[in-house]
Image (cartoon, one colour):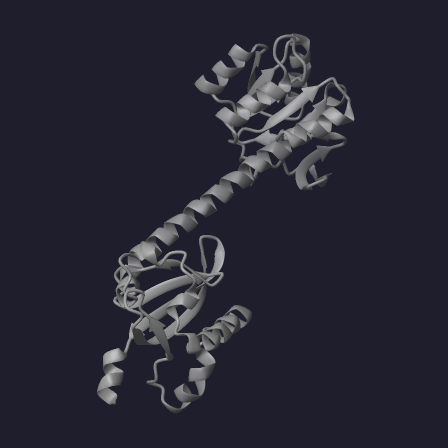
Length: 319
């Protein structure tokens, strides 16, 4: 009868017969799985570990410790700069272990190379030096963790934290890529909108469509980007606009809603737009507009989307 695989937790399969406990570290909490005092890791793929170490017997101890923890891996040892670079370029590992001091190559130099060539790969110092200053320096320079050779029982928890870090980074990248795709779709859609559309953040225009450039007499959309919103609002209307934008940020509702709410109760056909006066860039001519707005996040920043519709001709006809 085929054995059912253990359930996954991140990149690690959890054995149900193993007691779970949180492992605390200064900057957060990492999951570890313990039987007695030994951490057990069951990873759903074979990891490739690059070990920068001049002492082959130390590598034997490292491998033995990780195998006892249940980690599926294969390791390769190098002890020169040339060998280290070759492995990074030809077959990048999943994890890097490094001693601190080697006869011809040191760990900090290896860390710098790894950050340059493959910054996403966790880098763990496994060293015999117990100097506190050096341990602090390793983290300052960007190492993932620091384990003493005399305390190899700490290596499996360090690997666990490193694997979780990789998972978190991957999820963050996926979220950022999804956000970027969403914003690209947003840009494509608003270009089809016949009304002027502006996005403002920190009282500056950070996005505009072609209709907005046309309404405001700009030579191009780029001419609007970075411009203070105040410059396109007629001065005597600016204070009112600021007040409504502040209400929008504080209450998270469209700034026109309360002003239109009572009218909408009387007449359900009323469109919730308010009148504003914009100023064109090319001739300082005032343009009567109907404006609506809503909060959104644009490029990871809080922002406001403003839709403006030219009603100049309609107002003149009414007069």
